[in-house]
Length: 163
Picture 1 (cartoon, rainbow, N blue to C red):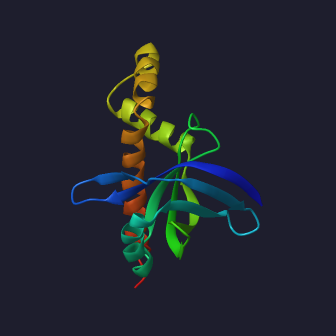
Picture 2 (picture 1 turned 120 degrees about the horizontal axis):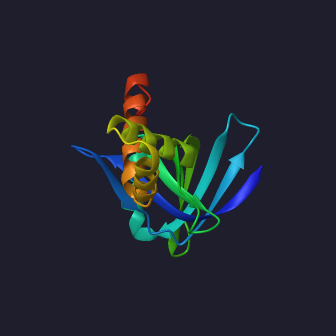
């Protein structure tokens, strides 16, 4: 097992028309790669108590969510994971939210998504390279598009929520 510091956590949730990003007010966090268990991860996020109303309904519905996580350093590229809230534990003045998650998309997947779009739009050569670097700067937009694809896959597998 490998443990990393969680520096950023966002929920990428299905909205009525597109994916909506919710930046979780993370106070502390850890992410553990449980290498022995089919590429699964355990995420602990320590949050303000007010966040319980955000996460309790998702836990009770066993809702599968797309999570955007950044580990170790704020300058690292985010990774997309799918996960569910396992538990919520009340601490003295905060809550601890545990997620079970699996890797859904990394920086290579987002780069591939950008390149696919550039090819579809007819870019090539230096123009493609220049536009790729430009689009890569808007990580949030591409994470949302990747999350939309992940939700489509979850919907087709019937794995979006367990009731």
